[in-house]
Each structure stands twice: as structure tokens, then as C-alpha cells.
Image (cartoon, rainbow, N blue to C red):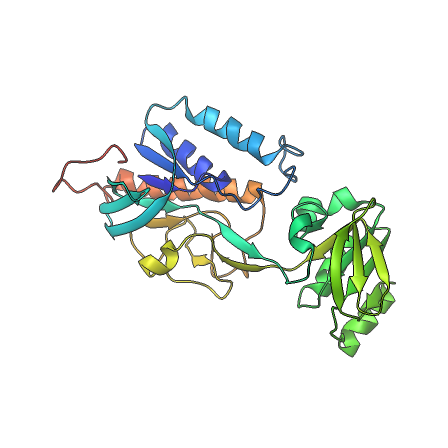
Length: 310
């Protein structure tokens, strides 16, 4: 098997398959969704661990399993079908695999506001579970209006000293405006011209010349696949832009599995951005794949010499 992606989902999938003595090649491009975050949170025993330290520990765990091989590089193409995939690596060579686990994650596209990118993953965040506690007792802002605005306000209300919704030029509808007012949430409707670092966290400059000094700023991001394989393979996608999978990570194409932020079941609106959930998805997906291997439903074709990827 080939696992594409060296984040928590891919690492866990490789570990689970390795413990079942399956031949696994994990290909890690070195690009990670949480690369800009200093610490990961909301993961029991790992709360506060730097992401690179988490990955290093996981790779050390994998080194104990002789059937697992790690390769630092990039998968450039996936061809073939269940039982006989050809996986091109670094545009230099290809390995054969009975099945492929995609764990390449998603990419967050930020609003175009100047200054956001430089603060992304720290002062600027999108998940209260991952970053909310770090802003406890501080003023916190929400940039933009969207379907989740009221939900985010409810989540952050017990944490922040005060909340400000920065609509960036939009006007909240009367129902939302009343709900925010009832919670004591300030609403600033002028356009945001820039976000800059400050001693507290970030200064948000508005079009009317005023500023908001905040400890943290939450934004909504647009998700897109980090790798082209969903489109290349014709996998069924959901409205979120993520790959549709079943309970065990199987996609719409036999032999192709997906785990982590890039995929979720159709009954959910989107994946939960969590290292713990991604790792759990890697384990469940690998278990589903291993069940197929154990039943004989998936096997490497004998028509050509088998590669070490399995």
C-alpha cells in the first residue's frame, strides 16, 4: 500500500497497517496544514506539543515496523485500478500498490485582507477548539459575516473578555444584529484595511481611521484540496470541497481511500480541523483497508513483479 501524506492521518494510517504487517510506503511531501502553528492543542497527552515534534515522534514510532518505509518526496501521479495502482514518485520512478490512502489534507485560503497571512496560525486562527483558550481574558475579534458567526460568538463568549464582530463592510441582518446585541457583542461595519502585529496580538485598522486592538482574530477560510488526486482520479466530492468517504474511508473509486481533513462522510457538513480527529480517521481508514485485504477483496495483481509498497 502507498500512503500519500505525512500528517497525522497518514502517519496513523501507516502505523495501523504496519502493526498488521502490511507492506506500506508512506510518501511525505513536507507540506502540512498546521505548519504555521507553534503548538497543537485539544489532543490528550499532546496538548501544547509543537507539530514538528509530534511528527518526529510519529516517524520514530514507525521505525519500529520493518514493513513500513518512509520516503521524503512527492507523489506526482496515480494511475491504474484496485489491485494494481501505479504511483509515480518525484517524477522519477513508480511503485505498484494494491491500494492507496490519500492523506494530503486541504489548503486554507484566507480573506484578502492585508496582514492576515503573516499572523495566520497564531494570532489569526479559525478554530476555537485549537486556539480559543490561548486568548482567554482578552478581547477577541471575528472577521466577516457568515452562517457560523452566531455559532462562533456562542463558543467564544465564555473565553474572551469581549467580542467584536468586524463585518468588513457588510451589514448584519436584523435578526443577527439583535442576537449579537443581546450578547453584548460589538459590531464594527467599516471595511478592514489592514491587520498588523501588536503587543497584545493584532491591531485591526478600519476604513474610518479607527482601530481595534485584539488578543486574537478568528476568520473563516475557504477549503481546497492540497493535491490534485481527487480530480485526477474522478473521486466524488462534497459541497465542502472534500472527498466523500464511507465509514471506513473508502472513496467512490475502489482501492482509493482517504483520511483526514481532505475527506468526510456526506452526513457531515465539513471535516473537523483537529489533529486528533485526523489521526483517528487514519486509524479507521487503515482498519477498513486492512479488512478488505484480509478478506481477499484487494490484492496486488500478479501480472507484474510486485513492488515493496504492497
